[in-house]
Amino acid sequence: MPQVTKPKAGTSLIEGLPTEILLRIVDNCTWETTSSARAPKTIVPHRTSHSRLCRASRHLHETLNRELYVRNLKHDKPGASCVLWAARVGRLETVIRARQYGVDLDTGLIVFSQNGQQEDLSNYEPPFLRASRHHQANIIEYLLRNGVNSHVDRDGKNALHLACIGVWKENQNTLRVVERLIAAGGSVQELNTNGRSPLGHVLKHQNWSTALMYVRAGGNLAHWRAAPPNNDVLRPSLTILHACLVQKKQRPSERTLSLQREFIAELLDRGVDVNRDRYIIPQGTEILIGAPPLFYAAAFSDNPACTSLLLERGATIPDRVMRCNRPEGADQWHATLYLEEPRGWYTLLSALFFSEWGDQYRRVSDISRVSEQVKILLRHGAWLGYVPDQDANPRMSALEYACIAAGQGRDTCLLDFLLENATDANIDRAHIDEILSRENRSKHMSVTKRHHRSPKPVACPRFDDVVAPKLREFRERLLLE
Image (cartoon, rainbow, N blue to C red; front, top):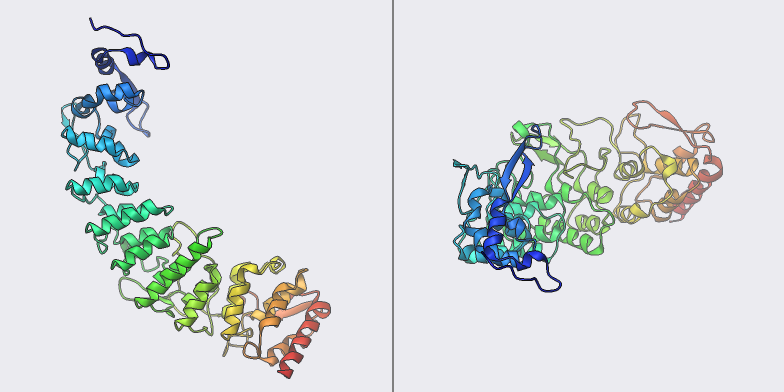
């Protein structure tokens, strides 16, 4: 009969049990679970993994360690493997000891059978892939030193794919893992079964440091997004430059904005077209996006440095763009595309205002988000009037939008800002005269609204008292310049 010793003060009763009794307890422990979350709640007994019991005390861990790796794994499903658990949470000492006891580190398992039948291992990532997904750099470095294979899972994702998928928030450990995998020969060109390179996973979360590391290692820029299902030509997609200019983070830090600009510069250095506004589908057909990257930089990037960079690299102020809303959803590169030339264009600034405030003119009370962008565009000749060479019913001009916002609301900030920063390079005096000379201007401004093909009045009750004096003063200033 094994002798039971009295436990020391401050320790649990189980600490005093001899090894033989501990092993007997373990062998008789069971736990109950359902066979499937969706299946009827059938109770299925399974032998408890030693890995669970060993977490109860250090004494159990030391006593049952060999049993954990050698004997009882034959009773456990692969998902209960202590090695796979250690790879996920970064317990290097567990992986090292498992290797000493003969565990195959390419699988993280000793035996593959369950109740005499071969267990399907396709759902279980080996330790190397699991450590890559969870950015456990110490586990990855140990496994690489001991010659494990860099497996590819059922979806074609290698370790680098999985490391990039898990990049929700960057830190030094994340960068260390990606750098180590690339240095170990991880393919930056390899695509998964969806035709997507690791870069697409990084851009989805806009982790610019990781993206820069990937691109500078020669990463594939042509397959950064998944291929359209069944080559669907109407799948909404953007170019890589458009997608990178859509800011997804709320209140991005200065460092984030700086890294975003650096990545945009890297794309331009590698030959990405700064003015391209069309997306080529797999069949080779070009589909109109509706606006060049410059509009996305001004409207969606929240980063004036990106707007300035595009203009420095040769971006031109477009004569006309489509009204575009901020791309949203799981993938920031989803947006409306047009198979043919749409009717009814807006100037860049007019489309920018509609993108920011829509038809809610009374909401125009804080322009801090777009003021720096507008100032940069005005400095480079952005037009405040109608789209050149439009038909008889042009869309609302940027100046008209500002006048209506000032005439409907209580704040004239947008109109004041435009008139303060505009020059005769941004507006034709004839357009100012046209606005001032409209009939019944004290009640309405007869302008084209949204997608209507005929002029529709928009209320502007404070036109005579507030808007008209400002326009006349601005017109006089232009005459003196």
